[in-house]
Every structure is written in C-alpha cells, then in structure tokens.
Length: 114
Length: 112
Image (cartoon, chains in turn cyan, purple):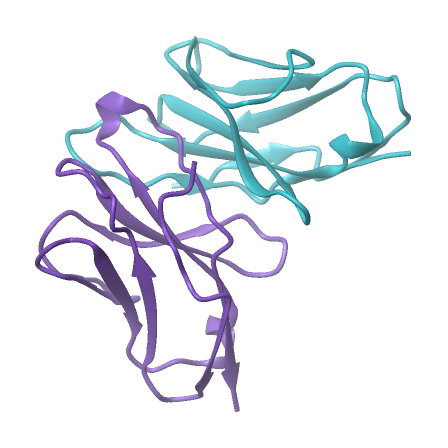
C-alpha cells in the first residue's frame, strides 16, 4: 500500500497570506489527523477528521481549519499567516478498529512564513 | 496533554540493546502505550503499542510493568539508523479520539 502523502512538501508564504495543505491518507483509512511541529512547542495535535466530520480539535486559534472529503483526503487551511506559524505540518491516517491501533504519518509539509 | 515522562537523551553502543524507559503513572485502565520514533524532520514512525501484555514485533519489544505505570522499549541490536527521537505516548481506545499527545521524547544516539 502507498503511504500517506502530503503536498506540497515545502512552502514559503508571507505574513498575512493564507495557505492550504493537502493530505492523502492510506487507502481504506478514514481518519486523518493533523499535527504542527515546531522547535519550541514540539509536536502538537491540531485536529482530526473522520468520515468528513471533525471529531477532535486541539488548542489552536480559529485561523487553523480543515476539512475532509468523501474520499478521505483532507486539507488544512491557515489564514492570516503569522511568523509563528512556520513549522512542519504533519498528517497521519488510521483506520477504525477495536482497541488500540496505530497512526501512520506522512513526510510533512515544511511551511516558512516570512 | 502528554501523560508520559522520558529521559531527554540516551546513548547506546552499536550492536547492543537499547532500553528506553517511560513513566506513565496516571495511565487509565483502557489506555494504550504507543511508541513512535522520528528521524530528523521526517514524519514519526510507528514502532509498537500495547495495553497490558508485553509485545514484540520485527522492530522492537515493549515491556509494560504489571501495575502499568511504566514501560520500556527495547531495540535488541541497535544500529546507527536507530538514532532518532523516541516518543512514548499514552492514549485511549479509538472511541475516545485519535489524537496523540507527544511529549518531548528521548533522543537516542547510537554510537559506532
């Protein structure tokens, strides 16, 4: 099976702009989660989508939003970019199952805000 | 929020077993212990997970204490490619949501 793919891999934006990142989960996986990783804050959970519905949300401002399509592909959007939004954005997918199960992470999108 | 405590760094000689400890004293009965690793700026890689019993797969072994308040990840024969940050994560079953709360992890350096 192909792994989780994220596009683009690298992105440079200017303060005040908005950005959309894309994630394609592993085939058959219906859950997609997004994480932000920065040197200062580490890996932080943004939100999770399952069957096109946001199921969980981390402690991020409303500038961060996302959605999931019927094919489970997901996008996240950051509006009014700030310098502090510079980070590695990671997407992870998993399939629903009983008990514990693992999430598979993509390679990430490196966003630089100038 | 992270519910685990790990040493910030460890060294291990190549070819020797690497034993990475994790404390999770507030773990609940239905929470699992997961281990992931991240090699410099790549996406985290799943290693292993367990609930109560010890687990082993092709990558590692997971030893969970009887009271479940701590666990140890064992890489039986460490190689240079095992140099990475290792995260121990505690999370509930799927019904409670898929979010992982990562702590600061342990930076493992395998020395030639």
